[in-house]
Length: 187
Figure 1 (cartoon, rainbow, N blue to C red):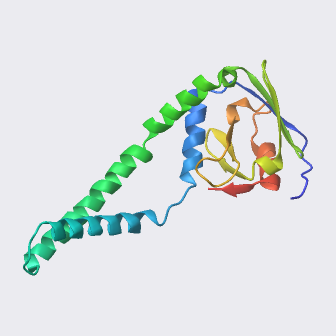
Figure 2: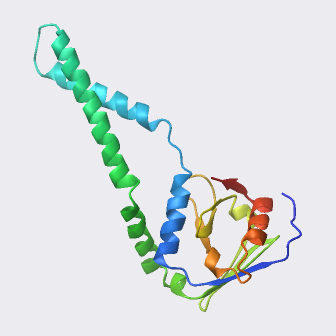
């Protein structure tokens, strides 16, 4: 990756639960699972057919039986998708995760000073100093509130949230230029 000529960008902020929720939602939004819907459909159909086979009927299936089985399978898939949306995609789970992150890492509630330049990031708080090379954060997502740096496209990847409100200059363009030069942008 090329070095960018923009000078270092500095940020001063204290992370909040809302910042983490924004970061977690942005990170998860980029994860795609095209195999999930066909898997749910196949699982529902197999479950319905196995249930019918174990019901003990020895006669052949009638048209009514087939229609009922298909309706039950479609209803099961729809219910499963709604349940998936409620449990996995709901914001409440991100708020819960953010609370756990903040509670387990009290230093995240301290004021943080971040310096971002062509070589990487340096984060400093009252109790710790962290340095990260660009090779640690290969992807980033920009939201209305923050820049979310991600180690990879995997669900459990490391996430670093840089709130836009913390920019010393107030202009996100220099930080965006650094990130575009050193990371892959994801929608």
